[in-house]
Length: 429
Ligand SMILES: NC(=O)c1ccc[n+]([C@@H]2O[C@H](COP(=O)([O-])OP(=O)(O)OC[C@H]3O[C@@H](n4cnc5c(N)ncnc54)[C@H](O)[C@@H]3O)[C@@H](O)[C@H]2O)c1
Ligand SMILES: O=c1ccn([C@@H]2O[C@H](COP(=O)(O)OP(=O)(O)O[C@H]3O[C@H](CO)[C@@H](O)[C@H](O)[C@H]3O)[C@@H](O)[C@H]2O)c(=O)[nH]1
Picture 1 (tube, helix red, strand yellow):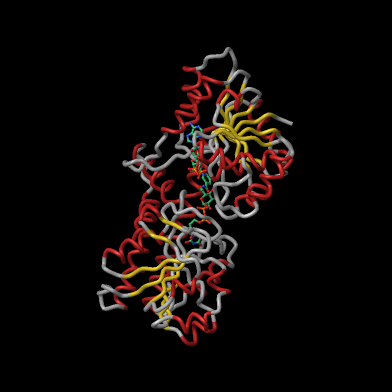
Picture 2: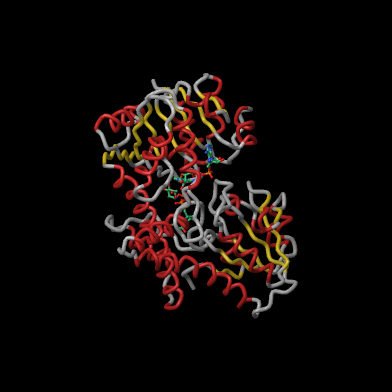
């Protein structure tokens, strides 16, 4: 079993650390955020991710998992160091590598053993080379370092499941030995391994995310056409998806993609492509379609209210960018709330997990019933299970008007809604 350090305890770093400890390795997670680390030390996950807390506590108690803000402590015994810090979008659209560069410097200054540095963050092609050279330029101890690319494919809300049951583990290494050491580290997971060089591994991650984003934008455009010609996009997606060459996954039409990955990763690969004179026109269009998709939804709502929502009471169901996560990054709800508030609507919000969206000054009500009380329309933005299981005949009694805009086609087969409500779905008439 191996001594591992993980830099960054966000959605990826924490899940990686917890799973590596669960399969028997000794893991120290390091973060610069005191607040997060204090919570983690107390056995509390700073993020909402089903199944994570239990596994984390189990491995803390087994002394396989510790947390620190101190680099010396974190790297003292480490043979492998993962980098799982954020790579947000910069002004230009390119990935901002500030945190990556800092992590590389932290490693160079503090490691005391020969180390394999594994870049798990999503980074543009060539970044692993950059990390290698930053470390070599700044290294203090007389030790050897080799950088290996190991992009992450987990989905929020399914992170633990995806890590144990992923479709593949991609390992991009410049030497046979370093790649094999990382392959060995993950061996207990018994997952298919793809071995490449570092640049191809970096590219696999962006190419996969961009492809999925294109798939979503494609079905959203098909949905808009369905609406215009009287077809039903869910049936169309089912029919298309039965062809295994197409596949049904990621053909759910709706408000478009949000979250911490697709929006920034599509921008980053499109930027990289332009810079290299090999433009990704399809990805650029997918980004445009995605922006337009939420605008079209807003237009539908505005049309219903004859273009005037001043003083109209509107309920928003769902804040997080998708169910089973508390992540608000690029959530369509934020756009809709801001736009409707700017137009004078009175907004109430309910999310089963997210209580506050501080960036736009919104607080979620404690119960769905409070949120919908006396409202003239409900906008279902995130497909949390609760929005299917809640008693809609009770909701019917509480609202002022039974009008539902379903941004996820989540209740398109719901009996009460389809019988008694004015229902606006996506890609259906
Ligand atoms: N969120 C996902 O579902 C997901 C999935 C696959 C890949 N990724 C990629 O993984 C990376 C991390 O994403 P995330 O969502 O986990 O990010 P996050 O923002 O949730 O977490 C990043 C963490 O790194 C910490 N950090 C920053 N600089 C540090 C430093 N020098 N030393 C120690 N800690 C530091 C931050 O305090 C933060 O806690 C990104 O590149 C992202 O694109 C994310
Ligand atoms: O048919 C679909 C599927 C998804 N979405 C939307 O697409 C976004 C992303 O969804 P999902 O992929 O489930 O969540 P993420 O957690 O963002 O995961 C994606 O981004 C991660 C970060 O790179 C990758 O690791 C994962 O493989 C990749 O699925 C969300 O807004 C979804 O609502 C749709 O609109 N229609």
